[in-house]
Structure formats: C-alpha cells, structure tokens
Length: 318
Image (cartoon, rainbow, N blue to C red; front, side, top):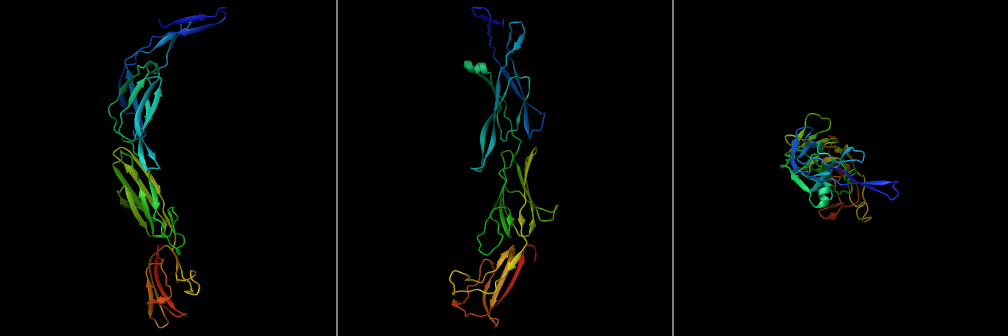
C-alpha cells in the first residue's frame, strides 16, 4: 500500500529503507495554448493528464509524492551566420509538476508541441507522449547586415575600408534576413538632419548609394499583424576635399609620378580640362580616379607649363 521494506543489519544498529511504488501511467490528455503573456516573446501552455500522482509513505507514516519528469519539445529557427540562413532546431523544456503552466520562448516557425514522459516509463520502455495542434508562429526576427561596396582607388583619400563611413558616394547593400513569420519588410532612410522626412523601401535586400555628407539613419522593421523586430544603421559620409598637384614627371622616372592626378574625397561630380598656353584642349576627364599621362593624340607633349580647369561638386555641396 505504498509502503516499503525495512532492511536491518545483523547488529540491528542501522536500517535501510527500500520503497516499492506502484507505477501509474501518466495518460497525457491535452495541450492548451494560453492567451497570457506577450506572444512575440513567449508561448504559455497548459498540459493536462488523466493519470494519478504516485506517492509513498515514509517509515514514520508521512505521505510523500514521487517526482515525475515531463519533457516538452518543439521546433524553432536558429540563425547560422556562416551559411547566412536560418536552421530548424529542436528545443526542450522539462518540468516535474504538470500543475504548473509551461512558459517557453516564442518559436520562429510553425511547430507542434510534444509532451512526453515520465522518466520511469522511459526506463521501462513505456514512454507516453501527446502532440498538440499546430502552433502558427507570430514571433519575428531579423539578422540585418550592411555591406559596403568597396572601390579601388589610388588617389581617393578616406574611402571606406568596409565599415559604414568614408568618402562619398558610398554604395551599401542592406540585407534584412527575415524569419519565417515576417510578412512585411520596411527600410526607412533619414538624411542628415532630417527626423521626419524619409525614403521608404519594402525590399528584403536593398542597394542604396549615399551621396551627401553627414550622418544618416537607416531603420529596418520586419513585422506581421502581431509582432515586430527592428535594426538600425548609421552610415557617415565625410566632407569633400580636392587637391591638385603643381607638377608631374612623365617618362623621366618611370613608375613614379607619371600622371597628373588629383587627390580627393567625397566628390560626386567632376569635370577636368588640360590646356596648353594657347588654350588648346589636350585632355578632358570626368572620373577623378583618372589622370593625364602627358600625351596628346598619342604623342608626348614637350616639358613646360600647362593649365587645368576643374569643376567639381562635393557631397557637402561645395
């Protein structure tokens, strides 16, 4: 009757108590989703069972409940940065008392919840389980990142080396990487000094070129009708700078100072003209990365004095 055996030593000075308890099946009956809590952060469940508790009596006659371990399992998504993708994972939670409601992190994908147990039944090879109705995920996540499109230039100073700052124009590729339950992706781009005016895009991946100097604010929202997650980036573009050399030495020292090139930062439009002293145009260029090699119509011009006229506009409007 829920008692046990007393085993005494030959001398009778010590005793060991060995309890024999009748195992009772759990008979899981239901899994209910409760409306309590924030569904974007957690799921609360109530598991009911028809089986009775197991108990035993101590040698002094006190009733003790035997702890039974129940395991709840479900699927969710985990971000794999190396593969740039979400992977499905199985999560578990344990409880020793079905009277308490389960509270678990909100899954990022549709899933079934399965309760199984108890540990004694598992030892006997008689484990029981019960599967819930399909839970439709509402929690959302983003794994946003911003990748700068690098430029190779020998005479541009302060060009970005990979972070979100540098010389204009700065081309950036934004990735939202939304989880399964996301229904809407929104990018908001606020120009420097503007807190209300913005540009809005609904692409999961967005390619944008920043042309004005200053600090931008790029805000990402991923959402559905219930939940929302966000991220923010702050691209910063330098003020403009343009410097021109006053001499160069084509052909006299091959590989060194062979071209007339400007040094620049945050230049968004550029037009340059090289002329001789009589005003004849020898060379024109619109890319500040380029330069004049001291030739005209394929032939080297004579050493001497030449003139340049450059018109450029910086990202700061100068």
